[in-house]
Length: 227
Length: 173
Image (cartoon, rainbow over all chains, first blue to last red; front, side):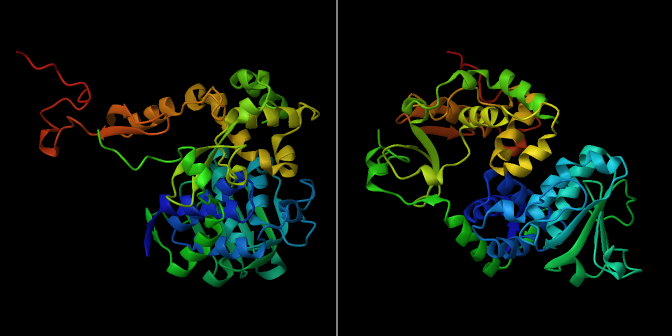
């Protein structure tokens, strides 16, 4: 069914929190999911896949061991949310010509919204690439995927299958990047009911069961509103 | 942004929180949570109800104090990216601190989980943004309001001032 991007962001935030992410990362997950949905990508499905993959596992296992050199996660697969957030936090390095290279990334499309935040701050386009010949990501000519954003629009090169891949051996983030044939975002998105239920199951973990104690202590609005 | 700059912001915007003794039960007697029953945000008693595990990130003062302490032994010139990589649990409050660093009215500068907190003023402020008027508190945790009282109809938008309809002119006679 059709959902507003606000609904998608709210549901994603609760779901990510329910899967054990810290609130700040849950917020990042939610904004990223919303951003992808706004460009017509199934962000909510990707998020549900990722949350199920790493459900309640320690975030540190899927985080870069170090921000120097190529980024690798101790568990052998990298969270796109944690590495994406770190990439955005380190965005200034890309202006200095440094390419941020991240290995063994789960659902790499979830990194791209962070490039958008980085691009807004840097004031230049940021490119995210994966797959293709030599795994460097060379856009359509070499196979592979190249997504470029200036924060407001998104340029896409590559096949949908590769864009939606569940795993990339290597993801490269760089700036400044040229914007070619950009897409502009939309304001609502379709999320299928199964996906909404998967996210809802995670979100449900954040709701406190009502207790007699809470009722006695006056939680919520009273039932009697007569004067 | 560097750890040193974050420290400055914390001392400037959350100075009151750094002076608060958060070990006292009275300082964090309450917790904000979302109830399964109505999916609405609620304020509960942290030490009397099983709600702490469900706490929403709505205690910026306490979180800022915890962050300040966590940063204490970090060199001032370290980028916050390095700190957050190891401590993702502080990402939420660090973002709030960065926002209040450039927008001083962005933060609540009082204890939202104190035993003495009365959320009615925050409720009123928030609801006012939605266009609520005629605040009629029904208890210290919920308030009855009127939405769009005296608001112009679409056909009146051109002929009436849209700025001050919440304060209608006193009727003569």
